[in-house]
Image (cartoon, rainbow, N blue to C red; front, side, top):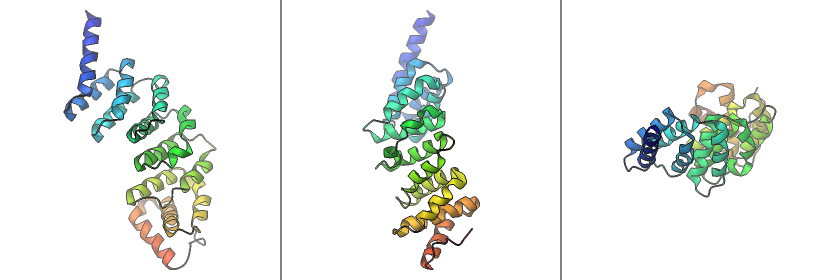
Length: 223
């Protein structure tokens, strides 16, 4: 009787994850996370790739983190090769929440420079969490190649990722100050401002960077 009840509950949860109502999908993901069961892992990952609602996706990620990393991480790594951008992005986001550094080799330069902005942003955040000790300078160099990319939110995400690496980013940012692209120069200067003064705010840092460039200085003399 107990096994039959469990099977019935499992099938209902599977159906609810596909329900047209986001509130039902949210409750289903919460219930699965509250009582983890490896049978749900594949379905949770599959749903992450297509779920349209942010809050439901976040609950799906939480539910996955409630399962053993030894089971979830290998399946999430497979998603990084998906042609569907949301599958890659959400897998990266979930890996960053799990924090298992065995996933680090899968954070490739291709993902860090993915053409899809959300995938790239998720890769930056995951990389900062998973990078092994001693490999931060190399990661900083890889991330710096994305300086100047996209709009405000994109640039802010990259700055936050770089700042999270700490002082190791300074040589890379100093080099980027001399880039031919003014957007790269401004972004590098603003990121270093944030490193020195996290409370300054990104908008202020960008405006200060523009002022430095307008004055014809890369700010190399600043310490």
